[in-house]
Length: 113
Image 1 (tube, rainbow, N blue to C red):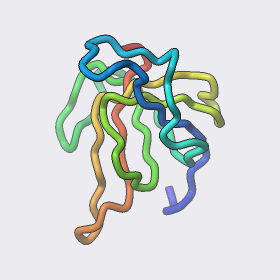
Image 2 (cartoon, helix red, strand yellow; image 1 turned 30 degrees about the vertical axis):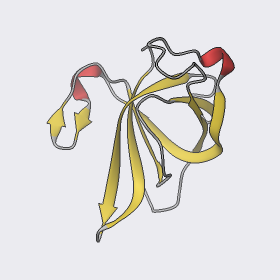
Image 3 (tube, one colour; image 1 turned 180 degrees about the vertical axis):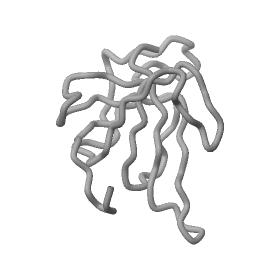
Image 4 (cartoon, rainbow, N blue to C red; image 1 turned 135 degrees about the vertical axis):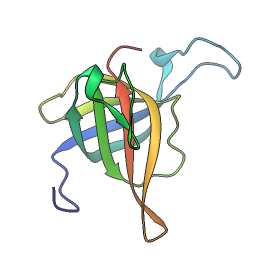
C-alpha cells in the first residue's frame, strides 16, 4: 500500500475508569483521537505477528500515521470502512521506524478482550 493511503477511519478511546481500577470502564470513555485515517487488516489467530514472531489470539492489525501516547490500555472504535461499528482492543503498540524516526504505528488488536 502506498504511503499516505488509508481507507478506514477510527476513533482511539482511552479508559474512563478511576486510576488503579483493574476493570476498564468504557461507558464513560473519552476519545483521545477522532476520525483517524488507518488501514485495518483482519488476520486469523495463528497468522498474527509481532515483529517477526507469531503471536496467537490477535484478530486485527491496524496501521496508521504515528500518534503519541497510544497505549495498550486503549481501544479502537471503527467509524468508517468495511469494519465500521466494530470495537478493537489494543494488545500491543509497535512504532515503525524509518531512518530513526517514528512515522507509523502498528496496533495489534483483539476484537474481544
